[in-house]
Length: 503
Image (cartoon, rainbow, N blue to C red; front, side, top):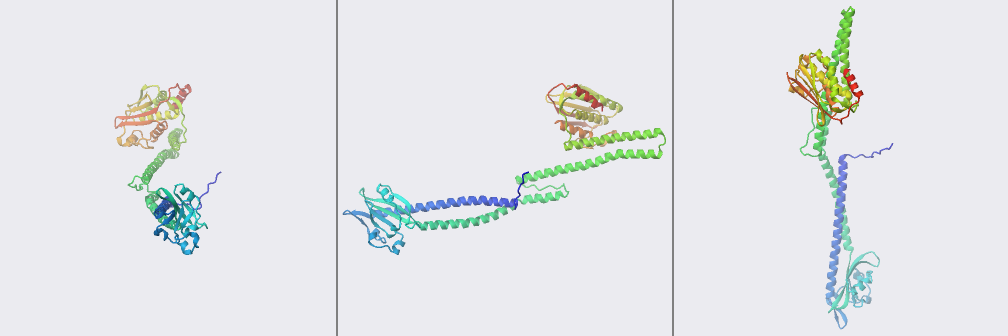
């Protein structure tokens, strides 16, 4: 068995959303800051390189050749420490701290003049050889102690197409690095502040977003206390909360309908069960007080047996419906000749019809096969015939027909009975629902569960049932079931149909 570890600190949805939003915002902020820092670094480096190139070009314009000797104008020669050869005097702190990096080499690459600070750099020889080849050289070098960097640019000085000198200019990048570090620190501080406010804003927005759900919770709690007439508020925006509210209202509506039907079902079942019990008790009480002969006791026992049989049918119907609702009834799936089953059921119902003065006609029984449970189909047709016989006046008739369509088997039972008002048609398949006029025709003759069982059987066989009726003219029930692949049913199935119909 695999154990599932629970988190030590379970977080609510609002905190989870806040953390997710903050993390996403932190990633975006980090990417934006990195892009800004990189762009600033590249821009400053480009500006520095451009400034060095401009300075080198300006210095190169101040250098000329006279009598085979390199000469410089006063603006260049007056640079601090640049008026003498570097080897002629020692470096002083002021010379170095000026940070002026300029060096002039002759056409052979030998140093001619340089500022004192230039001697602090470790400049590679490639800066000279590459420049002598006619290609400007540019790179970042370190000082001799390795603590600082400098950007160097090297180019040639030409007069009349002849190379006369090499100019190298540079600048320490310490200030540039300090500026970048300062920018990074400011970005970090601003990022923390922005993330803090974004976390607070995210939590506030999450709370605002869940406000409709809190309304749903409050309404659901009041509904939980038993008031199923209430409905949760539906927001105007068609978002997830809207569909959640609609779904909850549909569920509450369904629960209200089911509970109302269940309460009515329990009340009706109690009434129906109480009636035969009361009859049995009254009959036996009268017999105990007044019966004295054997014939009187036999009459009492016969009446008790009739009521017990009625009570048993009612209990069996209730049990069948309860099992059907729970899905515990397993239907058989076998080929059944619906026309032969209907013929056998009608033949067995003739006796009941004659007792009530009703005639059963079956003029059209077309051969058709369905795939289903033979027992339930027999019960379905028998209940429909019983219903038609019970609510048809003496002298009336019931017509049973079976016909085949390309896709369905259609069973039609039409009577000339008292009919049903339009207001009752939508409820006749509900349990224990009976029209008051029907009660007068045969009081106690029906438990009000027959049509409910018929409706359940039709749905279990993936069929449909419809009813048309007019008061005083009769009713017509039409059942449509999907046809099966035609196959001759076994003889045992037909024999079984006759036996089940007789029972």
